[in-house]
Structure formats: structure tokens, C-alpha cells
Image (cartoon, rainbow, N blue to C red):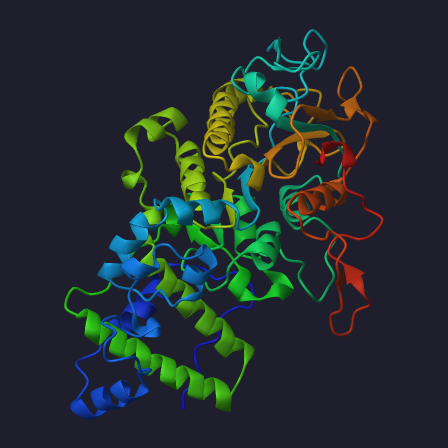
Length: 492
């Protein structure tokens, strides 16, 4: 028997090719009667008076199942097919199911500001100083707290935000900074520490859900460190099943529809046959490569069943206009939609537009207002839908920018003192933690680093930040090492 092709143990790259590999099973010529009879023999028995097909051959949930607990729905097999697309799109409009979805656990949306935004033009303005730049500071609805004049909408919801003005980290180059601020702690060679989204998906997600639990939305432009980082191992020692589904731009999810030439019955028969051989192979020759291959297959099959969730054209035009026309804004709206419909962690990125070594103020004058609107709309929408208490929203990059301008009127990398913001699930609103000096050179109060931040994020989501791990050949260590305490001031 042939072994399945070897896939990397980290991120599953949901490229067109990987999805086409699923389609090949549906494009095989008709089986002869012997094979078809063998498949029928594999089908589970059900009562003759029961008009519904057996659960593992059903293309979607029957009408009688629309009132069940979301967990029971997700535990059922959700095989691909046209019927499933129709039934899935309306499932979460059922009040009982939608309400159960809200109570099922914490979610997280990470607005990843890759390239590193300037704290001076956002959360920690220093107007009238040598380092402050040309933009004013404005009052917020939080007494005594100001933000940049480029953020008038967020100024009205500061009572819902938790801002950390005292981040102080070590890496000053993008790749290392991205690694530190997405994984949270130092690597443990030869094992790769999993990225934040993989940990959240593993701890809080439903692995058997047709809806991907960790999704990366990014147009993935060429030639930057974030693209290089994305080529690495995201899920680390957790395994490929906890890697992200990538969508947007170069990672648009195509070929999700089964061939029109294949009937629903043929499609399910082929799936049953494949399942039979997969189980037989697993019993005879269990391997990590085979497990990763099957994990990829099952998740692509799930993607086929929930393709409408990735179609922005199905969202209300009014919502799309409120968020704005840019890719980052539209992906933020899509993140809200995915969280509403069962995803656990969505990371929204847009290449590396924030790395403004040239014309800092001009570039931020375009970028910050977009973020201001996106964060305002996202927090407001989640609150209106009763989801904010269960959904942690994070907005940050990999470090900050220098207090001074370089010769090209840009700000360079500065991990020594910078800011980030959170809202929603598990964190207090109306909190500003820490402070920098009058010029923004040093943290003078409440200094924290990436490990403190991750301990805070995990605690807010109800995940033990200091859980012990035991990996072969390594001493016992923790998800975030024990000397890194959460930022208690921002936690509920």
C-alpha cells in the first residue's frame, strides 16, 4: 500500500493544490458494482422507518436537528456537498443555536499590525514635545486619558479598551519580533513553540468542527519578513491540525465546490471508501505524516461545507461600507463574521504596511484612521451582538517606533517602550496600564514584556498561562514561564 505524501508538521498551507487533492476523489470514474456493493456494506444500519440517512453519510443536519446544542451539531460529520452549503448558511440564525454558540467559550481576534506602528501616533501621544510629531492629542471618554488625534472614534470607546503603554521587549528586527509577539516566549530547540492562534485553537476550539478554528486573513504581498515568517512552523509541537487556514490574497480559498458531474450519492460513496482505506492504513502503519495528511483532508472537507463564510459578497453592503473598502478593513469584518459562526481565533493582517522608515507621519496619517475605524466598528459590533464579553480583541505589532525621526522623516524600530490595546473577553475596559517618560524614551511605570502580555492573554481567555509541558529530551517547562506574571490591572 502506498504511503500518503509527507506534509510538514507545522502549518497546513491551504493552497489551491491541497484543496484540489480532495477534489480528485470526486473526479474518479464511476465505481463498478463490486465496489459500490462494498461501500453499501460499510454503511451503518439505521431504522427502516427513519427517512434520514445515517449520520456519517449525511451532507448536513436535518431539520429536526436545528434545535440541538451546538456541540452536538459539531460532533456530527459534516460532509461536503451542495445541500450542506444551503443548510449551513442558515444554521446560526436559529436563536437557540446562536445563543448556545455565544456561551460555548472564549474567542479571539488579533488585529496584527505587522511592521510595527508608532505609539506616538496612536495610544501614547506626546504633543508639543521634540519627539511627539505633528499630530495633536485629543480627549477620550475616559477622564484624563488622551490618544492621538488620528483616532477620534476609538476616543469614544476608551471605556471599553485596555491600553498597555509600557511594553518593553528585546527583539528589534521584524522576524525575531514577530516570533516573540506571536509565540509569547523564547523557543525551546529543537521543538518549535506554537503560535498564539494554535494554542487558543487547541485549548478552546472544536477540532471536529467544519468551521476552521484558527484562520489567518492576509493578502500576503511579496517581499517582506511577515511572508517569510508565515512560511515557518506555526503550530509547533501541537501538530499540523492546529495550524491556520489561510485566506485572502495569495491564499484565497478556491476550488471548494465539488464537481457538478458528481452526484451527491457518488460523492458520499467515494468518501466512505476513502474512510475505510484510511482507517485500515492507520491500523497497519500509523505515522505522523499519515495523521497530518488525514487532518488536512478532513479540514479541507470541512471547508467545502462552510464555503459561504469566506464570501464577503454575502455580507450586508451596509456593513462592508461601515468597515471601509481596504483589504484590512474587509478582513476585520470577515473576522467578526467567522467568530459569530464558530471559529475560535482569527488573525487579521495586511502584509507589513506599518514599517514606515520613510515619511512616517504621511504614512500613519493614512493607516491609523483605518485602524481607528476598524477597531471602533469591531468592538461596537461585538457588543451589539452580545459577543464582546466572550471575544478578546487584540491590536498590536511586533514592537514600537523610535522617539526620533531619521533622515528620511521616518521612525525606526524601537522595542524599548511601546503600546498595544485589547478589548472584550476577560479584560477590563477603561484601563491604561503603565507609562513612558515625557519624550517616550523609557518606560517609567508598569514595565511588561511579551511574556507578561501572553500570560495576560491566556488568563483572559481562561487558559492556564503556566501549564507544564514535558517534551522528550527537555526539562519540564511552561506555556509561559512562571516568572512572567499576567498584568493583573487589566484582567477582570
